Image 1 (cartoon, rainbow, N blue to C red):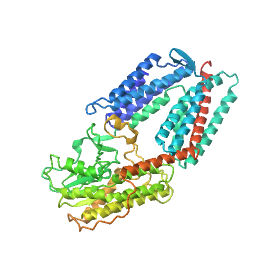
Image 2: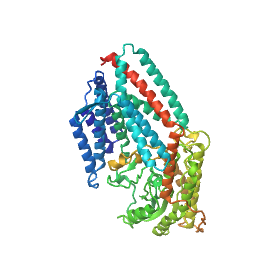
Image 3: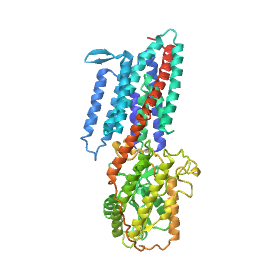
Image 4: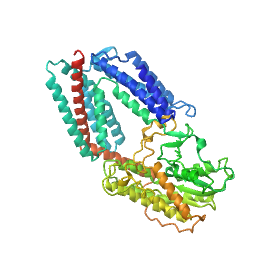
Length: 611
């Protein structure tokens, strides 16, 4: 166990160190090898009931240390110490001690409480049944007003009580099968019956969920059941390894490599805006301070960087774009702070400003998350349509600041490329055809508001960018993309920074629905062609009158996003309850459990003395 702990610490350490991918994978391979030996030793010991477990007093000390680490982390100075690391370390310690306690309970069929031994021979059944009831209650509450309570109960039942009950309950069954004189019919019956039950209920679950994306979940569920029955810590190894790998930071280039304008440069490109300008969908980013909570994720593959590095049109680049930026961030952070207070300010002349803005002000990133819910997300299309009605006023605040900060400098407003095609069946995304059409309508309406508002200030609008991914078949669901679209659907990658950011699951999908390196190459080509077609770009076009908006938005951005998340949670609850998905998932887990019990009972009869 000590060797496993050292290997785990090494993996977590390398995951946060920003090492090259090859180095991380080598360390991961070592971790897998050490874990395999550890788990194999546990299984060999478990065959005759002599598996080593953490002694009670040692376990109590470890839990106390873990709790102390977690509590103390809240008092640490976050500018000097990464308080996420002790929390993760404490959680791993508690997880290991809990796993050891379950193993001990399985070996002795009892637990010690206040010096007394209490039999738990039938606890497996009761814990499993209690878990099913709690999970069902939680799924039901997801549909009602108390969805937070429902989510907690669902997690407690499905991820706590049910696995605990099935883990404890497997040992009496294995011992019973091991001790039967003629166990072959039972072993074959349980194994074959469990396999049929798993296959049937898994198939029904996929049909009920109406999504083939559930298949990997069902496979993981079966493997988790096998790990639980095996009397090893294979499940702990899998979970900790998965968390460690998801915490691996993307590769970084030194901050000094970030393109910057030279002294007295006379024609500098200034890139302002959000993640579509910063290059969020990339796999490599420029280095940022670890303590910086606002992660800009500026990428060397961003199209503005490619233009500055590979073209002779401009004398340099001032790269201000930042992932997640709304209009207030552009004004306060990028213009008033980072641009105006830069020591280089005044030592170069901006030749052109390119600006991407608006998506975060209308919750564009939330659409993908909402449309992953079981029901068709067009049911709440009015929320997103309403948020777009508020966008022009937000854009005017940012455009006004840009206009004042860059008088006489051409400003090119860049729209969002259409990310997806809507026709036909598509396995690249978990969206229905109507949802894909909705995303296209939303993008078109978003770009139209951006275009209309840009015209009020005489800014140029790069309309060709709307179709940047079309010509080279880089849109999602385009049959011609060869499985390599220019935009990510679900991009699983952690972020840089402190452990509490890197190991936070909500940060693991930040590159989703963003152009990747291929997408930015296509966007660079569009901008380069536009420059060639407009060699003498006027600083301002003729101003147009603001469009009259009579429609009122149903809610502000945050309220609409809350309503959308609430709706998505309700749909999950409906699918669990109305379609009986929770029942079919429980059946699949039960089938996998029966197969695992039969297999490990057979192994114990062959390789160990039963008793």
